Length: 294
Length: 153
Picture (cartoon, each protein chain N blue to C red):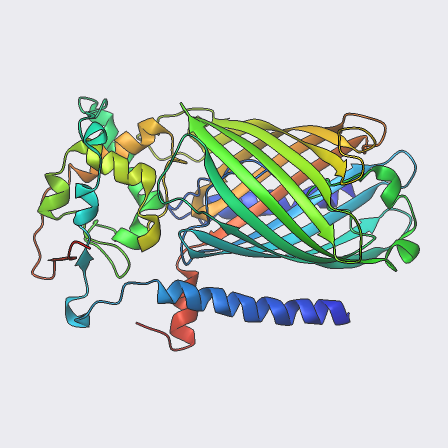
């Protein structure tokens, strides 16, 4: 099972290096946290992410999601997620979809750059992608068998304030989230923090796929902040995770992040990886196909 | 299954709407035959402090070569392979860009022209943005009859 998990990234890596085009993305390494950079206008980024998790009171699981991220403008990025999971010795199932929008309210760069994030999600109780931790989320919530967990459905609205700064090559992010299950549940809160930096700030004057400037390394930390009735860091889960991204030719990016639970409510270990490919000019192509402006 | 189909349907509709929005933002030239709009006014908007900055890599012979590779990676999609401009972005070979203070070009790279479709490039570390400035300003002027200025708002 584990060897199959990693077959995909290696195939993509090989394909990317053999059929390379000069376009390199400049993606951050975060998997949970967000910085303030929008998707480039008219570009579509297709991303696949995978999380392998070990839980104390249940079977190991592998959850996965696909993101379609489109740069509608330089200040608005819209994104769809489709996610599913396989729990070992249990079953595999589709667990829901999400639609997220990020808006950049300010025209210019500042020391701290805010981005407004709005998301609607329709997911089942079997969802295990752990894209964010909110309220009193903990591993006990997902210890039930899939057949039972999938019977619960959540329609949630999620708001985030994403703050991000760049200073001397470092990127620092602070995200806070407020989520509301539309079925009369209290507001729940969460956070994500991150810092990252390319391994080299100057670009090399020769073509190379594994130059240090193509690697961006960092650390992210995320967890819940309770709900409206019991706000705080207790009775929820928290994680710390080193993150590494490798920007590859032909607009591919590979991300890897081993995450470690910081308390007894957390999953013991989460191994995440993701692959993304940016398609520049997708909007022009779609416009051409559907007879838009030329 | 029903949720999956609904998700796909909603996704298609919304993605279509987003693409439509992005196309509305494309500046459609008044005279399509002279389709290269050149937003020189953006250079003038750079603050004095930013314009006064000199390129710390001006004497680095490798900066322009590295800048060329960065340009291929990040800029050709909109500005064209030879920086001659494209449907969505102006020529960088125009005299206004070539003669602009390096600090002003750096400021535009850092801040983008967000309301007119140019993304913020501060995600490139500062030395890489200066390498791009070195390359762009090494290209030299290539005047075209199609170059026009946007009026000052």
